[in-house]
Image (cartoon, rainbow, N blue to C red; front, side):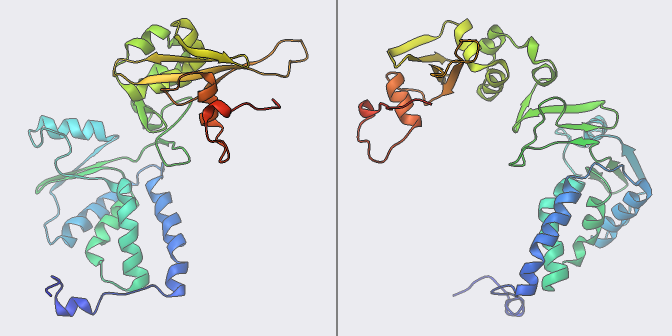
Length: 302
C-alpha cells in the first residue's frame, strides 16, 4: 500500500516519547503560553532582526523597508489603503498569537530532534511582537497587546474593561466569555435596558446582556409568560427572542427567611420547553431513581 511517505522519511517517524521527552511537554506548554499571552512592549530592533530571519529562512531577500504600527487594525488599514488586500489579512503572520502551533514545532525540534529549523525566524518573531505583514519589498511589525484577559477556558473575557487593548487604548475590544460585545455592555452595564435586550438581533449578545442585566429583572420587566402551574411557591417563566430561541427561568423563594423576615428570590436557570415549574426543577435536579418528573417533590428544602 502506498502511504505517501518517502522511505527516507519513514525513518524519522517515532511511535512514542521517552519519559524524559514527556517531562518536557509541560515546560514547552508553559513557555509558549507565556509567549502567546505576553503584553510586554515590543523591542523593535529585536523584532526587525527576527523578521529579517523569517525572510532568510524562506530563502528570500529581506524587505527594503520595515514599518511599525501600534496595533493590527492600523496595519490592516495601511495594507488595504495600498490595495494589497481587500480583507486586511492577506499576508499576515500572527506573531505571538501563533504560539499555539509554533511551540509544538520548537518542542519537536529541540526535544525530539526533528529538524524544524526553517521556523527559526517565526519562533524569534513570536517572542518579540504581534501581527506582521510581509511582502517582497516592505514588511509591517505591530505591537503585542498591552492588555489581554481570558477566562478559565481561554476565551477572551473581562468583566470591567477591554479584554484586549493596544497601546494607550486607542484600539480595544470587549468580550464576555468569548462573545464580542459593545463597550457599554462591559463598561456601563447600567445602560442595558429591557428594550435593548429585546431588540438585539445577535443571540449570543442577548445572552450576555441578560446575564449582565439580570434574568429575573428582565423577565419581570417584559412581563414574561408564566408557564404551567406553580410548584411549592415556584413559578416557571419563558420569553422568546427574535431568532426563535427562548430563555427560561424558575422564580423560587428561599424557604429560610432572612434576619429581617424577608425571603430572597432566586431566578434559577432551567431548560426551555418544560411544561411547568415542577418539570423544570426536576430537570435541573436529576435523580437516577426517579422515573417521571411528576415524582419530583423534595421532602426538605434548604
